[in-house]
Each structure stands twice: as C-alpha cells, then as structure tokens.
Image (cartoon, rainbow, N blue to C red; front, top):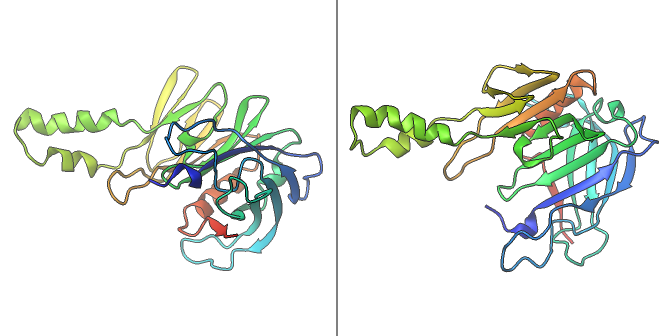
Length: 251
C-alpha cells in the first residue's frame, strides 16, 4: 500500500477537437478526504492538473507480451508544486481508442492505494469502457464490478469440512486467484480467463487478483459494444499489463 499522497482520482471531459486523438483538457480531483490523519489534500499531481494527450508512436519496447502498436500518451501535468507530489505522470493507450470517443465523454483516471492504474469513460452516465483495476473507477449507473472475497471463505470450508483443525487452510485460500464479479441488470457473472458477455458489455480479465505480499488487483477490460474501439480497449489493456505502464517525472 502506498501513501494517499501517491494516489489520485481525476476526471476530464473529452473536447470537441479530439478526432485525431491529440488534445489537452483541464482535469479535476474527484476524491474527497481519505480519512488518513496526515492527509493534507496532497495527490500525486496535485488538485487540478492538466491532461495532455499526444501521439506517442509505436511501443519501442515491444515483445512477445508487449503489443507492437501505435499509442497515445496521456500525461497529467501538475499546475504547481502546491499539494503535488510529482511534476507529471504518463501512461499510454492504443491509438484507436481516444479518437473513437465522443465530445463530452467523461474520462476518469485513478491510481489506487495499491498503486494500480485504471481509467473509465462514461457517456451520459453510462459506461463506454474501463481498463485496469476496474472496480476502482466509476462504471456508470447500470454496472458494478468487484472481487468476491467471500469466495475465499467458501473455499476454506471445503477443507474444514474434511478436517476442522486443518492448519494450512488460510494459505490454501489465499493461493487461489479470484475471478472478477460483474453485475448488470440484476445478473452477475464471474470472469476469470474466458471473455464473458453481459448484456451490452464484454469483459476480459488479463490478470487475476492476488492477495499477499506482493499482491495485485485484477486487471481487466470492460467495453460496451459499439460505443468505442473494441480493439483499442483490448490492446490498451495489454499495455496496462506491463510493469512500466506508469512513469513519473519528479520536480
């Protein structure tokens, strides 16, 4: 877990002049008080950074698990040193994603206490797409996503039914990667390795959640069919799966 000053939740509105994918727009901090006693409001790039989107070319570190794709860079630039831990942060998405959005779409960008990155796009309050630690970002009024931790307790009961004093039961439960639970219109599905369809949404899990030290959140993509570039969402998910997806520039 990182300190709250290394996290953020910003939102920006996609401007009209975004057809080529490159644009800049003001971003606004959305998270309120964290409840931490030493939270003075500092966030990674301050309370009101600027989002700059630019042509980042091909992924120069492409490989077997790194897609060789054209990208857009998304750089959040602090407006000043006040309550900003660093000067700027940068990450990338595949180049067909942002041009497929519409003017007025609401873009959310989150870095969690687990140092996980996630983005989501809402259109008139309904999800267009989400990438990364999906439960950490707004998903609109008709979609919910979570990691069902209660399944670990059910898994443990299988062993305890055989041996109520089985001493390693917690270790067995923690070793099981949990699926992502997604709910829409009263129906819930579990997503692990195989793509699932739920109403108008398609859900993929690229990396399962893992408890422990080090642990990680589930990395997933969710897209509403026909609302944006499906290829852009899925290839952006592959970019997010890399260890160096997130770059920081110090003051």
